[in-house]
Amino acid sequence: MRFSWNYSVIQTFLFKSLLLLSIALWGTFADAAPFSRETAVVHAVRKIGPAVVNISSEYEVARRTNPFSSFGMDPFFDSFFKDFFEPYGERYTRDSLGSGVVIDGKRGYILTNEHVIARGSKIKVTLKDKRVFEAQLVGADPDSDLAVLKIISETPLPAVEMGNSDDLMIGETIIAIGNPFGFSHTVTTGVISALNRSLRIDDRVYRDFIQTDASINPGNSGGPLLNINGDLIGINTAIYAKAQGIGFAIPINRARRIIDDLIAYGEVQLPWIGVTVQDLDEQLKHYFKIPFNRGVLISEVEQDSPAQKKGLKSGDVVLTIGEKRISSKDGFYTHLRGFTADAIIPITIWRNGKKKRFNIRATLFPEELAEELAYEMLGVSVAELSFSKRLRFKIPAKYGVLITELRPGSYLKRVGVRPGDVIRQINEVTVKDVK
Image 1: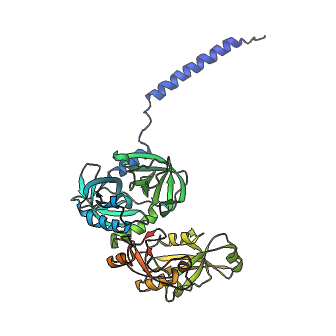
Image 2: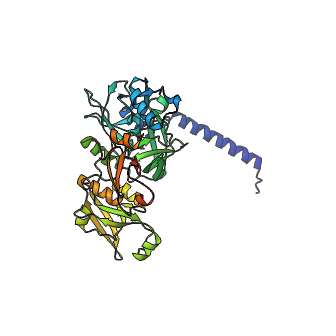
Image 3: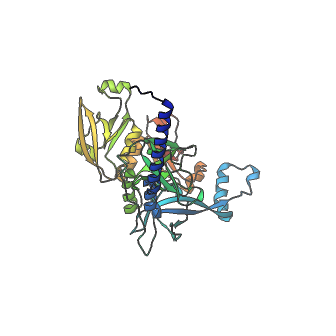
């Protein structure tokens, strides 16, 4: 007996079967619970949101008018007229808005950016529950752009949990919370785009930033950067005005050391180990037989310094500080500043074809060596810029130090610097007085 297949009948049967199956499955899905909208981001924001604060820093601006400016007087005398007439000029106040995050709820400590409160005479902190406090500045560090504030509350404040910024992964999800353009508690998300970024802003270099694609705008500065678990991994900073779709944050592990110093001393206690270094060129690499394309050469070791006591010598090549590879003189001093005075600093060097590792306990720079070091390294002796010296040398500058002597053969002397010139800045540090 033969069977004849009717394909149209088979197709109709299969279609009806699939339709009935789909209807049955749809009824099953329809009866099931909807997907949860409480993602990890929602949990993290709910957990940390109350610890994020709005910071309002009030500062005074003076509008001055020199009544004698139309006579075309010497700029030197013009600066003195500004000094004399400033107290009587028109004054008005402005507000600088930023963000912060509570890092110690019991003691009321808040972490933010230094540039948020830099000019402020009055600092106000607003919590998420709308309570307003007048804040006290505990300490600030312009080099790292970090500051610690303190508010006094009758009850403990909600605080963030510190995370670890040393194990961050490029591509992992991050969350930024802040007050951009005055819109309080704005949440943005993104990923970590890069690590160890360096930025030059005006006359200052900032290093080791976390780069993200989360939106960080004016007002976000000082707010927290969180990982997906809601742990604090960085402090957002909006100092790069040209950034579009790019955000930067200060790693929290670097901030920890600075926070401790700001709370204890009101300023960062910079570490000193007593070495002077220089960049390596091809000639030096060949002379010292260095098989690396990184490192800096120790050119001098101070007597009785921590480095000298541990056995470091001139001619050693520093390869790493901690776990950070060193490729330039600037990088050496930057990574050194990542430690505080009294910290034990692991340093790996190259000497006679071998690597050696030293653990050096840093100290504070001995102030009694300052004048001697300035004369040796810069080739100058300096004095305070007093009123009489400003008048004598016709110096309009209000701050700086006056060069009184130049060491014969020094670089500054060779390029034309003279006694009576004023030093106003060294590298990225503004010089205001002899100290």
